[in-house]
Amino acid sequence: MIKSFLKKLLPSFLLNLYHFSLAFLGALLYGRPSKKIKVIGVTGTNGKTTTTEMITQILEEAGFKVALINSIRFQIGEEKKENKLRMTMPGRFFIQRFLKKALNVKCQYAIIEVTSEGILQYRHKFIDFDIALFTNLSPEHIERHGSFEKYKECKGELFKSCKKIHIINLDDAHKDYFLRFPAKEKYCYTIKNQESGIKNRELNENMEIIKAERIETREDYFSFVIRNSLFKIHLIGQFNIYNALAAICVGLSQGIKLETCKSALEKFGGVPGRMEEVISQPFKVIVDYAFTSNALEKVYQEIYSKLKTQNAKLICVLGACGGGRDKWKRPILGKIAKRYCQEIIVTNEDPYDEEPMEIIKQVAEGAGERAKKILDRREAIKEALKLARDGDIVIITGKGSESSIVVKDREIPWDDRKVVREEFEKLNTE
Image: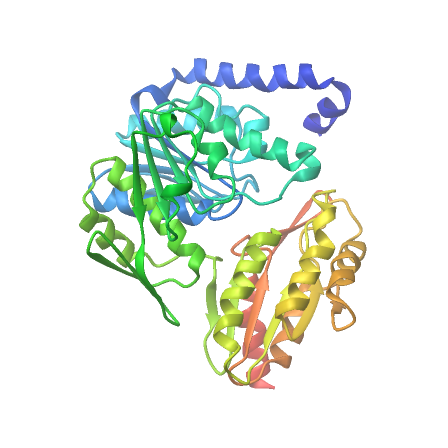
């Protein structure tokens, strides 16, 4: 309530001063702990959470004590807690207190998932980042930032504030923007051969390029080779190859051997609610967090590629957030579903203060006449399971491992995975 009041009352420059002052006071109060611990900031549109988890796995495999802030959890050494704040990047006092506690228990590294909203509110200020990592960029939060260009520039603020090590995805269309920021060392990762297209060579002489070669994808794993070392990782999706390469770059930048990175990632079991297979037989049910248009398309592409040679259907359950968030993308999400899915069910996600059925209609507008509109998310999941036959795949997106649905100012307990198991069990006993 206070935050909403301040946003309406204060002009933008005073609101910025307010956020900046909180960042300064938080750092002052806790004694700038980031000066005594190595801090890794991971930003981009998609893949941030999985990348932070992979980095954690590599650092721990190398014997380091690690602290972590991401969209699903907080970790300080052995202590792990679910992130129930519905904020990927928490407030300034929270982060500084977190870093102080991590320092007190002798963590050598802290990994922070850095969001554009966090940067807008100066949550990254007075944190001494040792590594800034860029995953990828696609249109998102446009209404919040005013334009895609401003959204991109906001992400660039992390790289402005970090002068030590930059890690960049060379296969992203916006790589040159992030490569322009100076740093002592740069590590870049690629699946394609992008080295010849790098601009501003004078800024990028101290660059090491990590390229995945001999890539193979199977139903439940992918493999690739780096410097004659074969990685076999039990995840699916080409996007996870990029996440793995980003994490490997972090490891190499810290003097960790490639074989240690390999050992860590081959033990990595994935992230809850990210391409998580909840039911395996007689059909598959997968739950994923994808809520951006780019992420949703990649998820659908990955699953569709496995089905197109079979006589089977892709059944999708999707929705969109409310609260005025990126209304432009709602029909686009529907169009993407129409392109890949044989059965489409549009349902409630997190309506916040908007009328949920209006959001559903806007998504369904893009999905066309085939789309079923079901307000109750449980009923939507139940319908998807009833439609599924042997060999089909049901994909439920938008919430992943989130533990609630937000309606106005109420958080209603929820878990897509739990609901899937309950409704599947009911179908089997009917």
